[in-house]
Image 1 (cartoon, rainbow, N blue to C red):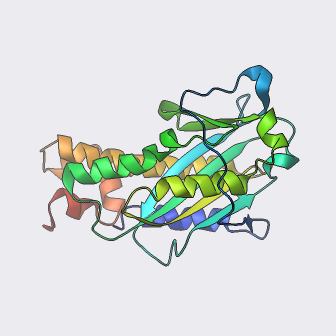
Image 2: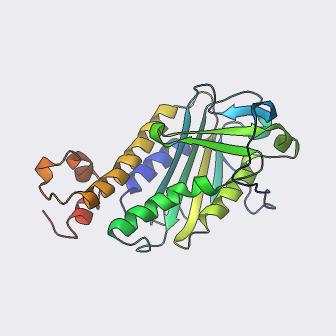
Length: 238
């Protein structure tokens, strides 16, 4: 499972800086709420990625233990209790799975999407995620009451790691949160787009029986990503 490894490396190169810091793991679990629970505007302290600010959300998988050796939560920027107004935001999750646990063909595609969709089954109190899949945009409303109770990124990060570990294939998760004002969020957006192109290429291969690479609009992606061509041709070289 090397399909996304180069993107994982690029994310790590961008996000592992002198300013980034690791947050505590294994804290007392922050409470979850119903998936129908809403944070109204009047109950909102601020939004992460609100008011047309950058708002990037991405989940990328790997089977390489050197890339994601253990569970971690890393913050680059201010924590939730230090923020008072809308700020740009990114949430990048690097998820390590056991080799050969995701299957092949349609099972592989569905497994990848299933891990991405973990964010739709993640409901920490006072942390209302809103996702626009078409725009690759992920914003979060932060509740006033939750901040008074001590909500921070360590608590949401630990809760999201637990959500990923409900999937038996997952071995480790490294979540990065970014709120730094001067960070180049466009670079993160471009990497998220690259990851999505790989996933869509996998789906395209399953839906399209054409084996003539020269006639395929996704040939460039296939040529650049290790493992995609082998996936298409079932291990046969072309």
